[in-house]
Amino acid sequence: MSEIDPEFFKRADEHIGLANEQIKNGIGQGKVSASFLYSVSRFNAWVAACAAKDEKDLLEDKEEILKYFVEEYRKMLTENIDDYINNFNKYMKE
Image 1: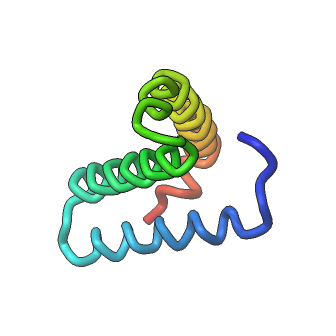
Image 2 (image 1 turned 135 degrees about the vertical axis):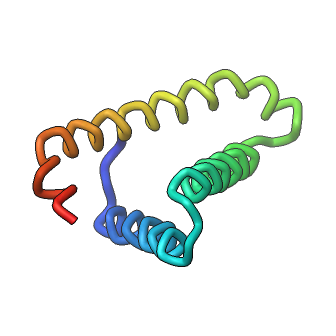
């Protein structure tokens, strides 16, 4: 991940807060996770499209775009799973 701006974790916490509210309202974790993943993929497709000149440009960059986002997600997920492994009893006390 590139340099993190000062508001990075605040924005992430706001997204997580929305997901937690949906779970509190009776929507299952799996359903919230699925729609969360979809929304992030949809948003990132839009970000990629904004950087393209046209659909041909986007198509030419498709594999590079996919590689970038999948690698970044994998790094972030690995980091967070490791954090839960190291802090399982603290985080999962509830």
